[in-house]
Image 1 (cartoon, protein in one colour):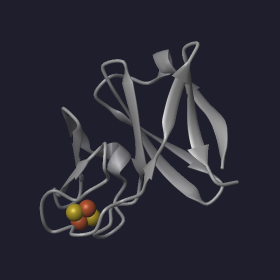
Image 2 (cartoon, protein in one colour):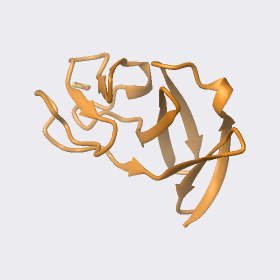
Image 3 (cartoon, rainbow, N blue to C red):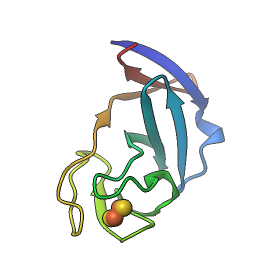
Image 4 (cartoon, rainbow, N blue to C red):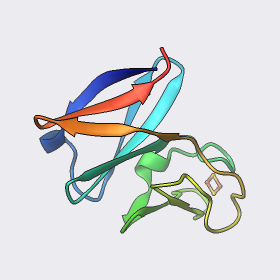
Length: 103
Ligand code: FES
Protein backbone atom coordinates (compact mmCIF):
# COMPACT_ATOMS: atom_id res chain seq x y z
CA UNK A 1 0.00 0.00 0.00
CA UNK A 2 1.19 3.49 -0.66
CA UNK A 3 -0.11 7.02 -0.38
CA UNK A 4 -0.76 8.86 -3.63
CA UNK A 5 -1.41 12.59 -3.83
CA UNK A 6 -4.57 13.18 -5.86
CA UNK A 7 -5.67 16.78 -5.37
CA UNK A 8 -5.54 19.95 -3.35
CA UNK A 9 -8.33 20.14 -0.79
CA UNK A 10 -9.43 23.45 -2.33
CA UNK A 11 -9.96 21.72 -5.68
CA UNK A 12 -12.69 19.50 -4.23
CA UNK A 13 -16.01 21.31 -4.22
CA UNK A 14 -17.96 20.63 -1.03
CA UNK A 15 -20.92 18.33 -1.51
CA UNK A 16 -19.88 17.06 -4.94
CA UNK A 17 -17.99 14.03 -6.10
CA UNK A 18 -14.87 13.90 -8.20
CA UNK A 19 -13.61 10.81 -10.02
CA UNK A 20 -9.97 9.74 -10.08
CA UNK A 21 -8.50 6.83 -12.00
CA UNK A 22 -5.44 5.38 -10.31
CA UNK A 23 -4.23 2.31 -12.16
CA UNK A 24 -6.98 -0.29 -11.77
CA UNK A 25 -8.74 1.77 -9.11
CA UNK A 26 -11.64 3.99 -10.14
CA UNK A 27 -12.20 6.15 -7.08
CA UNK A 28 -14.88 8.69 -6.18
CA UNK A 29 -13.75 11.42 -3.80
CA UNK A 30 -16.21 13.48 -1.79
CA UNK A 31 -15.53 16.48 0.38
CA UNK A 32 -17.94 16.97 3.26
CA UNK A 33 -16.92 20.02 5.28
CA UNK A 34 -13.21 19.56 5.94
CA UNK A 35 -13.39 15.79 5.67
CA UNK A 36 -12.72 13.84 2.50
CA UNK A 37 -14.12 10.38 1.77
CA UNK A 38 -13.07 7.97 -0.95
CA UNK A 39 -15.10 5.03 -2.18
CA UNK A 40 -15.11 2.93 -5.32
CA UNK A 41 -16.69 4.93 -8.13
CA UNK A 42 -18.54 1.97 -9.72
CA UNK A 43 -21.94 1.39 -8.21
CA UNK A 44 -22.21 -2.25 -7.10
CA UNK A 45 -25.60 -2.57 -8.82
CA UNK A 46 -24.91 -1.66 -12.46
CA UNK A 47 -21.62 0.29 -12.41
CA UNK A 48 -22.95 3.84 -12.67
CA UNK A 49 -20.44 6.48 -11.60
CA UNK A 50 -21.07 7.35 -7.96
CA UNK A 51 -18.98 10.51 -8.26
CA UNK A 52 -21.89 11.88 -10.33
CA UNK A 53 -24.39 11.19 -7.56
CA UNK A 54 -25.96 13.63 -5.16
CA UNK A 55 -24.44 13.88 -1.69
CA UNK A 56 -26.58 14.03 1.44
CA UNK A 57 -24.49 14.41 4.59
CA UNK A 58 -22.25 11.30 4.50
CA UNK A 59 -24.25 9.42 1.88
CA UNK A 60 -24.21 9.50 -1.90
CA UNK A 61 -27.17 8.57 -4.07
CA UNK A 62 -26.40 6.61 -7.23
CA UNK A 63 -27.41 8.71 -10.24
CA UNK A 64 -28.86 5.75 -12.16
CA UNK A 65 -31.28 3.89 -9.86
CA UNK A 66 -31.00 5.80 -6.60
CA UNK A 67 -29.30 3.43 -4.16
CA UNK A 68 -27.66 5.28 -1.29
CA UNK A 69 -24.12 4.40 -0.20
CA UNK A 70 -22.46 5.28 3.09
CA UNK A 71 -19.30 7.31 2.40
CA UNK A 72 -17.63 6.02 5.58
CA UNK A 73 -18.28 2.30 5.17
CA UNK A 74 -19.16 1.84 1.49
CA UNK A 75 -22.31 -0.04 2.53
CA UNK A 76 -25.32 -0.01 0.22
CA UNK A 77 -28.06 1.50 2.38
CA UNK A 78 -31.01 1.22 0.00
CA UNK A 79 -32.07 -1.03 -2.88
CA UNK A 80 -31.55 -1.95 -5.64
CA UNK A 81 -27.84 -2.20 -4.72
CA UNK A 82 -27.14 -4.80 -2.03
CA UNK A 83 -23.34 -5.06 -2.07
CA UNK A 84 -20.88 -2.53 -0.67
CA UNK A 85 -18.33 -0.62 -2.71
CA UNK A 86 -14.66 -0.41 -1.66
CA UNK A 87 -13.54 2.23 0.79
CA UNK A 88 -10.14 3.88 0.55
CA UNK A 89 -8.20 5.54 3.34
CA UNK A 90 -7.70 9.27 2.85
CA UNK A 91 -5.46 11.77 4.59
CA UNK A 92 -5.23 15.53 4.23
CA UNK A 93 -1.86 17.10 4.96
CA UNK A 94 -0.83 20.65 4.24
CA UNK A 95 -3.96 21.19 2.15
CA UNK A 96 -3.16 18.19 -0.09
CA UNK A 97 -5.31 15.07 -0.34
CA UNK A 98 -3.73 11.62 -0.38
CA UNK A 99 -5.29 8.22 -1.07
CA UNK A 100 -3.94 4.90 0.10
CA UNK A 101 -3.95 2.40 -2.75
CA UNK A 102 -2.21 -0.77 -3.77
CA UNK A 103 0.23 0.02 -6.58
S1 FES B 1 -26.47 1.51 -11.04
FE1 FES B 1 -26.48 2.31 -9.04
S2 FES B 1 -28.37 1.71 -8.18
FE2 FES B 1 -28.34 0.86 -10.18
